Every structure is written in C-alpha cells, then in structure tokens.
Image 1 (spheres, rainbow, N blue to C red):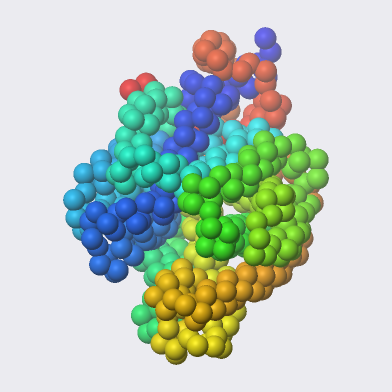
Image 2: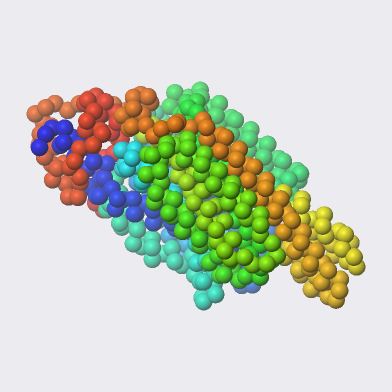
Length: 575
C-alpha cells in the first residue's frame, strides 16, 4: 500500500472518529428530525392543551412561541461555543437537555410549567441544530460526498417539519396532548449513548477567549428581531412593542457586528460575508423559507376551512410535498455536480415559482390532482434551492468556522420562516378583510370580528344564523380565496427575485483542493509528519474498522496542502 493511500485512509478514519461516516450521518439526521418535529408537532395539539390547562390567550401564545423564539436567539451562541469547546460536547449536552425538557413537558400540569419546558426545548434545539451541520462539515471533507450528506440532512429537516402536524394529529386523536412530547424520550434514550460512542469530536482552530458578551449581544439581538417579526405577522406591525423590539434587535446586531470586526479572535469571522457566494446563499435560504412557511400556513387554512378537511387529512394532503423534498435531497448531489450551484439554486426558485402560479387555480372545490401536482413541484423546487444554498454556504466557510456558519444558516432559516408568516400573512389579511364589510344584513361589529380570520368568520356566521349568516360565510370563503390568489402571486414574485439573486453563486462546483487554495486553508495547518514515524500511524489507521482505505482528494494533495485540507477532527474514545 502506498504512503499516499495510507494517508488518505488516515484522513478518512480521523474524519469518521472510528465509525463509518455514513453511520455518523444517520445519528446526526435523527437528532435533526427530533428538533424539526418539535417545531410543528404541537400546532394541532393546541385545542387539547387549551381544554386541559386552561391557559390565557397570552400564555397560549407563549406555549406555541417559546420554542422557536428561544431556539432562534441562541443558535449563534451555541454554534460558536461548539467551535471553541467541541461540537460533540455541545451536541451531547443538547441531547440531555432536550430529553429532560421533554419529560417536563409531558408532566406539565400548568401553563407556566409547559412554557418553561418549551423554552428549555428551544435551548436544547439551539445546541443540537448547528452542531449537527458543523460535525457533518468535519466528517465529510470531500465536497462531493458532503453534498450528498447535506442533501440527506436538508431532506430530513423538511420531512420533520412537514410530518410534525401529521404525527401530532394522530397522537392527539388516539392518546393525549402530552404524547407529542413523550415520543422524544425513547428516541433520546437510544441516540444519546449512540452519540457518545460514534460521534467524533471536532472543533475549529479558534484561539483566544470565547466572547461571552458578544454571544449574549447576538442572542438578544436575534430575539428582538424574531419577536418583532412574529408580532408583525400577528397583525401588530405598527404597535410600539413591535417597533421597539425590531429597532432594539437591529441595534444590538449592529453592535455585535462592530464588536466582531474589532476583536482579534471574533466569534464569527465577518470576512465570510465578503464572499458573494456565502452572503447570496444566506439570502436564498431566507427567501426559500419565507415562501415555504408562509405558503404552508395559508395552505393549511385553505385545506381545513375552505375544503373542510380534518387536521389528519390536511397533513396527509401535504405528504406529496414531503416526498418530493426527499427525492430532491436524494438527487441533489448529482444535480449539483452536473449543473453547478448557480443553476441549481436558480432553477429551483423558478420551479417553485411555477408551482405557486399553478396553485393559483385553486378554488372553492377540491381538486386533488391539481393540489398534488402543485405540492410535488413546490417541494422539489424548494428542496433543490435549499440544498444548493446550504451546500454553497457551508463550503464557502472555513472548517474552523463551521459552527458559526451553521448557526448563521439556521438563524436565517428561522428568520425566513418568521418573515414568511409576517409578510405573506399581511398580504393575505389586506386582501381578505375588505370583502367582509360589504355583506348585506351583517352588522358592523360582526363584520369586524369576521375580518380577523376565516375561522372567526365562520363562528360569527353561526352566531348570526339565517340568511345573514349564510351570506357572511359565503363572502368569507370568497374573500379568503381571493386573498390566497394574491398571496400566491406575491410569493411567485419573491421566488423569481431569488432566482435573480442566485446568479451571484459560482457557476460550477469547485474541487475541494481548489476551494482550499482559495480560502487559504480550512483549519490550522499542521506540519507534515516525518516519513519513518508515519508508517506505523498509517498502518494503525488502515486497521480501523469500517474506515475506507481508498485515498481521495486530500490524499492526492502535497503534504502541506493536505494538512490544510483535512479538518481538525480528533478521535474521541467511546463512552
């Protein structure tokens, strides 16, 4: 066996931490699946929670929002902490906290306890999400293999978010609302020991003390922006609290950026944002999530309130979107290698815009073939876009900053979701409300109440009864469908804007060696080992079970370039 081949084996063995890297990917994806499920699984359980715990309207809002608010605000903090103290360490701590918070939620007997449990779940989720992506970056140093891994990772995220309502509806229908949290416990009981045994430890080449003040500033800034965006989406865009939260959050984020630029050892290397591919990828993630979450929310209302489907039937109708996303993730690596990031992300946006315009044909009657076709195109197009954007963003970031880059990507994901609800929800409300103030026989107060939402309009119509109630119900359905069509057109315009933005991405998928040379090395360079001591180390690496011994791009590089191309991953003993 040549020295070059043995060096490649040593690199792959190190990257896998002694375990097959595809097994490591399975562990990471199961972790992400739990976090993605918990983001949406509670939505269909809200009526059961309300009946059992009797929370106030404010407490109910916090029960739903505590998880995403806390999670989004702490992503940068824990992502950069993992770069410093070890991503595996942060991930395992996140597992433990997520399990404990799930147990607390199952046992919750008051709104306050459930809110606290949801907040702790958000902390655990913020520890898990960036760590999974940054460990993936380290375990797959070869860009082509990493593209395949990212495709699987993004597909799992889409599956978790889409199947959350289906699973939640099934559990609430057959058991009690606490069962939506109970499912986390057996999975965590399996994944925690597996993670300790299989996951490799990795950290960035960061030096100097961790900037605690900077991390807290970023957390507070993101929290302010997310709170403001969520309040705007709830119809309080001009409320002083909303404006104050947005301004305070933006000011804190500006202070965070200025602080990072001045520090010798920043939490996040702001030079990443000077790379067009990195900033463009982040923007594409925001736009893709804006379209996905905003449209999904409106589609759920359409399916339930206009077509009269149950929550479980609604979830099943959305499954084609999930399957299409899985297919896009499975073929993403091949597509990226064939057409490059620019065309992949751009055509993904175009395909999604076409799907959205097709859904404009939705009306008052159920058209399953049209809906299925539209959802398939929507899922495939959005997943293609997210795949290309995440892969480009992560590959543009040095491996030493993988945790910070992953946190930025996940934060943009959360912000895009919040902005989608706020922006598209505002368009929907602006088109829906005026149509309810011109219904004959409906008093002004009743029309004002019906203008809040389609569900409220139905309840108002039931209270009115008679011809006035029937007229209000018909007018509300017509106004909602009109608003839906307008929202879809606006969404298509935003998606086409994303296609134009994608023109700033690289035309082709660069070879790992080319990317390493352009970035100046991913990790701290280490001197090449002397020839004689290298032989027993290579033989030891070759003997590692399940490690591939076939060389690779890193093995073909000169020694000094290979040291830069290999991520700073070290073996961690089992247990």
